[in-house]
Length: 442
Image 1 (tube, rainbow, N blue to C red):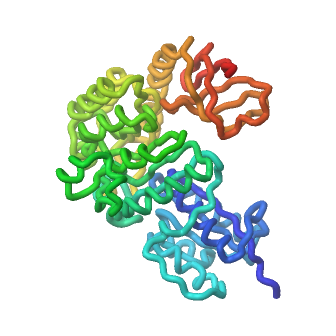
Image 2: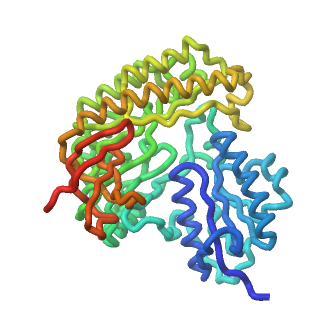
């Protein structure tokens, strides 16, 4: 019987999962596998899972059943946040063929019975990814988390923080720029806790004083090193933890011309008691002080955040402190989620005592407030000339992309070759989460 050497990957969740899927694709293609049109005929189907919310977990159960029903002969690989959960393994034991911790990616060939010579890899990061985009690339700088926020499963699913050597990151970034990528997105569960040894090539150092004054290279210095790479490209990063947002990092963002003026800084709640119960390690005043410092030092910066509503014990008064935070900070964007208990976390032991309908109400209230502040923030763009990186064209004929401040923008142009290019547009109108403009002729 002929081996079906095709694959299909379904990715649920964060940018880290998307990056992991790109490395899985690169790995499988290195053994001669080709991408299938869909999961129904693929010889191998990979599910890169998210366990951060119950809704994401429930989606996986439905997908597994559907895949095995439509394609019973496929080899089903489950990786991501749910791959190490014993309860998930028990529930899906008859349908999943391979349970894969992403750090063990180099063992997948053996586990799929792919004939190959034994190869040794120090890290799955050394596997060359097959990137979905030709102009924007994810470069993971590490994996895992040491923070143990009470609601979060990531430290259990991905393990403790492990960071890549700076030389590897720089080499991947240089290769990306050489290959024409216009946007480098540095990702980790907590990018601003990055620590590594200094590169051996001293010419790459930002300056001599930083070598003399620090035994380890931190995230600020990593940004400087990548900023020093010749070429016309942007640098983005996600996600930052407020407790690790240093003055040095803020100044670096402000001074590096390639680093985009957008910072995603998850607050998670606007009340000190809830933050303490979440084990977030900062107060709301400290968070607001950070926002003030960032806005003072980084011109035209946009701020986004993550918020959880209905954390165990959150009273209406405590939720109103989150409302107050939104009114004071005026976020450009926020990802608002209803709390759901996650197995193995500290918060799982707490009573999930905020009713679902109240969680929905709180989510709606914040979203309505966000729309108002985002619209008010966007009005300052009217008449401005901004640069966007073009990411596509919609059915209505609008080219679209994102500004340096991560604002979605659209415009019309007869030029058919703008995908993946930088284009200057003048903003003529705005919505709460979008800009519209006219392309400026060169």
